[in-house]
Image 1 (cartoon, rainbow, N blue to C red):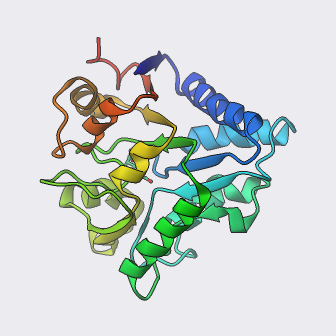
Image 2 (tube, rainbow, N blue to C red):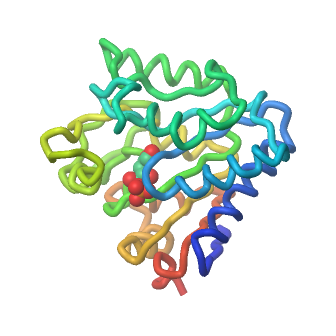
Image 3 (spheres, helix red, strand yellow):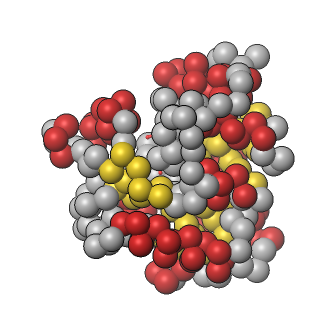
Amino acid sequence: MDIRIFDSHEALDKAASEVMVELARSKERPVFGLATGGTPVGIYQALIQVFSEERLSLKHALAFNLDEYVGLPPSHSQSYAYYMLQHLFGHVDMPPDQRHIPDGMARDPHQECLRYDQLLAEAGRIDLQLLGLGHNGHIGFNEPGRGLERGTHVVSLQEETREANARFFSEMEEVPKQAITMGMGTILQARMILLVVKGKDKADVLSSALTGPITTELPASLLQTHPHLLVMADREAGAQLF
Ligand code: F6R
């Protein structure tokens, strides 16, 4: 496990984007696993900056997002499809048919999970999986519990997660109760995992995830088993690590 601590978000975002740029340059057909939420916004901005300077092309890259809310269409401002268009896809040259996000509007969400796993299988392993960290230790929307699932599945969001995400909706009732998420097995199969954590409110959970027991009650703790885990944290989030 490689842990890097940064004094500023700017430096962290730049360093994380460089890892992605490096992969995009070194592989003919790189496969990215992408995350949404507040954490990666600056990383995507840094990537767009490199793209605008003509130092990066994602024309041959594939992307698979971790998750999507059930019941939100891509046109909804809080859907992850909308987020990705706003924060990354709308600004780079990755063709639409190479960008994948679970379809939250699928008539049969369970069938959608099978379709997503099929697409992932066809793409081969994810080269680089970008992850944020939930306050309760979730990864994607793999919530703490007695067990974790290997493949893409439908989850009921925990109240804590809904409350954390309520800031993006006008009222709590609007926060979806279910999501489709890539499974822990798929995430752990990625060749490399880049876990990015920001803010003092994540210091406890980050420390437990990286140094505590490995348990499904803290899904991020499973990342300890990954042979190529790179953690990038700001000083506040990393405060309890050393
Ligand atoms: C988002 C995702 C979530 C977030 C996590 C942290 O696609 O899968 O696991 O990474 O909830 O969210 P932020 O970055 O908003 O603190």
